[in-house]
Amino acid sequence: MGPQLSWYLALSAVLFTIGAVGVIVKRNVIAMFMCIELMLNAVNLSFVAFSSFFQDVTGQLFVFIVMTVAAAEAAVGLGIIITIFRNRESLDVDDASILKL
Amino acid sequence: MSTLLFIIFAGMAIGCAIAMVSQSNPLYSAISLIGVFISLASIYVTLAAPFIAAVQVIVYAGAIMVLVIFVIMLLNVEHSEPRRKRLKFLVPMAIGMAAILLAETVFILRSVQTTENHLARNLSDVGLTHSIGEGLFTRYLLPFELTSVLLLMAIVGAMSLARRTSILSATARVVPGAQVLAMDIVNPSGVQDLRPVETETSEEAAHLLGVDFKSDHRELE
Image 1 (cartoon, chains in turn red, cyan):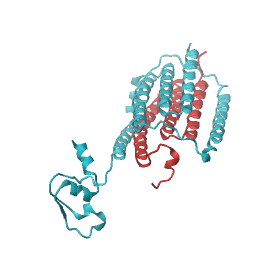
Image 2 (cartoon, chains in turn blue, orange):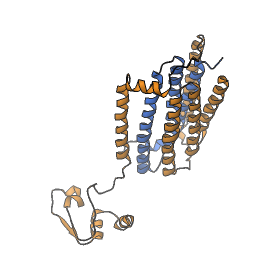
Image 3 (cartoon, chains in turn cyan, red):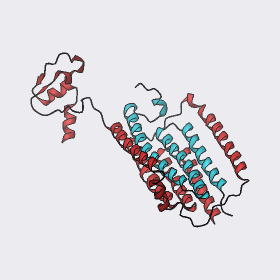
Image 4 (cartoon, helix red, strand yellow):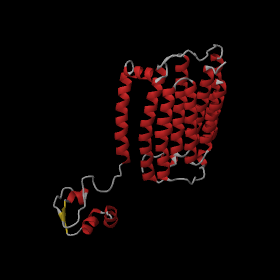
């Protein structure tokens, strides 16, 4: 008996939960950014699991597009982080809670 | 055998994810996140999706994490300040939300568990590069092209965000020697008086413009 579909879904849910907890608990903006990446990966895992179990390639195409969006998000997000650090000299999200400088 | 592999890699993924959240140094949590990506890529291989596994290693563990580690080292913030008082309620809130999410997981597991669903072991081409390329360029051509537009937008956005802006406008140049500066460059608030200001030296011009000539000069050399 090999691993069943629900095992992969459970692993995906656990990883997503850890990522969500990290986004809430962390204060460093780069750490929050990495937790968001972890949540994206958890969803990717459930896509690939469904795709393999139902023998349909659509799920893997979605994963491909999600990875592209994650790469674009990394580029723009890190640019924003560098700009915030230049303007406020801090990476704490609470220091950037006000739009005005 | 496949069960054993799943348990090993799932344990690695969860362990690295917990280590990532519990670390206070962002560099260590980045390295733990690379561990999560690698173990997820191994799980993709056991799910007969070699193309996605390769892309996971190349794009996530390669490109994105190198970018993240580069930014961490560029900003070089290692000291962690003490937690502020008003943030105390966030930890119980995180525990509550995690409990809700895990309860949903248990519910889904109980309803899915009734249907027997094993991984089909027949050798189909789903997951190979051929089938993914065929899907991307026939049925899902429009999302593929939209993704390329998105990447172009991300390039332009990242460049315009990371560009260092100075006091002078992008077209202004301080050149050595005697020069004539327009009044609206020297003082933008007095634009109605457009008489030019004449200066003899670069130091004088730099003083009028409010920039540090000496450091700029040194950077140029």
